Amino acid sequence: MPPSPSRVRFIGSRELHRDLPKVLENLENPDCRYVLTIHSKPKAVMIGTEAFLSLLRGATPEDRLLALQLGALVQGLESSGAETEERQEALIAV
Image (cartoon, rainbow, N blue to C red):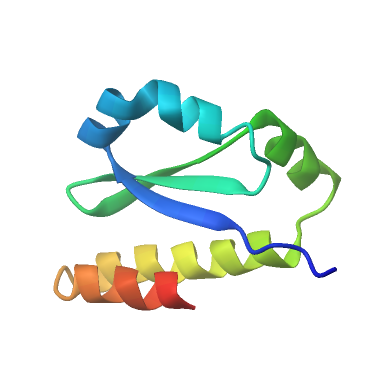
């Protein structure tokens, strides 16, 4: 059975504050990832402790894909503030 794809969700700081208990519960799933955004710009990636320990042991293909997507998104934000939402949607769809 192939591994399930990472569940990556973009979440704003206000939503995180409001939904923190639910977010923490979701992070118990080692496949769950949150990208914390402030003013639509990625600022942090949140993963659970099991996922973090797995990363220390070796990145999965899904984690490498997430790193590529976030790298492209951050690089795009630095070069141009326009089209931010379109880029996020395109990267999420990959």
